[in-house]
Length: 621
Picture 1 (spheres, helix red, strand yellow):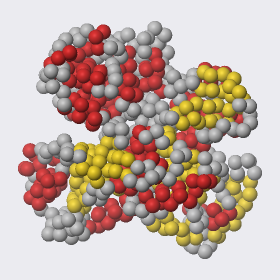
Picture 2 (cartoon, helix red, strand yellow):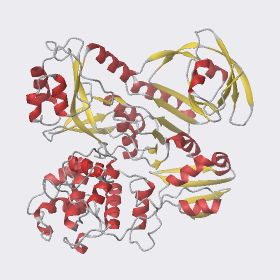
Picture 3 (cartoon, one colour):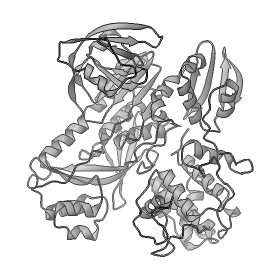
């Protein structure tokens, strides 16, 4: 039975890990708590454990562990990320051109002096910082009330000296800045105050901005409730997050207030954007509130609760037990578990912020510009300005999906309308082509190239995909592992999968997750091919894992409702129905054109995966 919730016993979606330590909690008490709260049935080995270390090792979940009082305090502080620093009030990164300012903090002398994002500090007290190195950080260090002189090169190439005071500056886990009509919310974690930071920042500044950027790079998560509140700031009322328990029941978190802006959001992510941050970025994507730019996120789709003395005063004092209790899904029903959030624009980390800076939501008033739609919003690029950062412009073009048409306009008149490769060629923009070179005769070039652009297909390493070749079992395992962004260590389970084979980790990961099985307990047959119905059964399992509504659909099917699938083996009929009837046909062709016993080709597999990810809105542009 569904229940509507606003708070889930301080549900935590953080990635912080601790080591089990000496505790007052007994193994017996821990077992009792885990039996009541853990998301999955406990393995038999858990009941043989003599220590907490053995117990948690048997469970094998890195997010379920005991915390001593000291560890609990550190964990809480890590979620809140509230502290102070002494300095001039800038966040920085080290580049070949100097120390680049990535944000300017309230309360610091740098903000009073008018320093901005993108300025480069090229000298501190006369000492050159070009190229910048981490050792240059020591030049910033000093007591509050002392001064340093920095030499800054601005975006227009001018340089200026500034004498700035070091101050004690409060550090919040979330900061808001507005520069040139763009509001930036930089959040390091989702703590108890994060929702109010988002709401207050948007309320105070929305009339000053054209669009918002939310920077979640390196944000490892925190409180799910805080992520939902921050998301609701941009998307308004409605269900934002779903949880499923081990008994199959569902909970959902409802956000009640109205949204505070209808302006699009650009979310910046990387591989360390995790958990609660994936709730936010996945929610923005799911509700067409904006786009996501960066690399694939971490892929933590489970939520934990902390059991402490507030709930069990007889078992805990300052210590606690963190337990995985829920698997969560975004408002579109999709999980971020393993697969993470696939960005709208898959961009290398070094170009993420610069690519976002190229995008505008209003057409430039003069000159040549580009325009294209992404996730329900039109974006514009001022071409003369963008050419000043040729590397970022090239990274943007490489990330655009191949079936997207780019308008090139001048003075409000469209000059050309071509795909990204054609536009780049016309304009002389360096294009790092992620497409494959051998698709001229393929029936599915767009789907295959789309998977290449999003890093889900790697081909044979030479730019070729071999679309007509039969798909081997090892290749399917690799395809699924790339899609889910997972790998594993060879466990020696299969005698015919040696640890030095290119597919070893993929086979281990995919069989551990249950998407594929061996042909026998000891053999996987990596070079064997698959029949169409075997392939459909595997892909149907994937769809059910990715989207809980697809799984609910499958659980309600009956023998009568599957009668039309009689050409397929009984074990493949449910998955065949999921792929064709749940939300449109995800297969590469209609089911009545498929011989269940025919082999599957590589292009058919790639096209099916692309269709699935797009129909489920996991790949959304």
